[in-house]
Image (cartoon, rainbow, N blue to C red; front, side, top):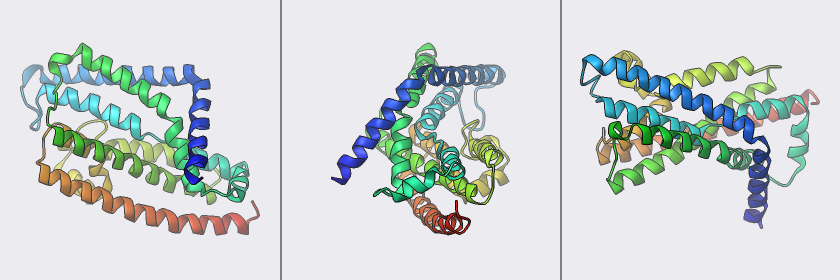
Length: 266
């Protein structure tokens, strides 16, 4: 019965997203253009060198296309949704329903972004097809398995981090600035723009103590074979550790947020 309830919600979210196909298409076109521009930059950078911090041109192009796909699958708008629910008073309605708000929003968010994710994957495949001679193909099935597990963990990490940012809505009237800043910082610290090796060593060392180095960057390290199977498994363990820690933090702050929500009579 519980599964049927959430399955119905997932289908509803998916169907609603079909209404905004044109908007999704324009977003994905922007992503496609930005990825192509970044790849053109790499062609210029590699015109006078064969290696850049251990990456060949083919590996760098594969990395750029790969983080785009991982980013598309893990992208979430939960922070904006929480802000809307809180300040429009919609949250009260959800709290009265016989479902967990967090589960409700996770399933709704995950199902709703399937259309945009597949558009992103499709445009990435076009890039790969156009530049197939520069694309690294991983034929290691163990590596693929570890890669897929890591991507699933990245989806959870992005959701929880965005959920935590969204909880700021209970204390601030507008959180657009927080959302934008956190998105930019995440793209930098997760290696979504460029691999972490291209940053100063101290930056990479600091990020490695946080969950960010075990998100998009980590997944692509597995795919490219930059780390061993043992290192990949260890990294998956670290991902799981951060998922648990951040989930506990989200639960604690969610309870505090609800108390504030009720105390101010929203």
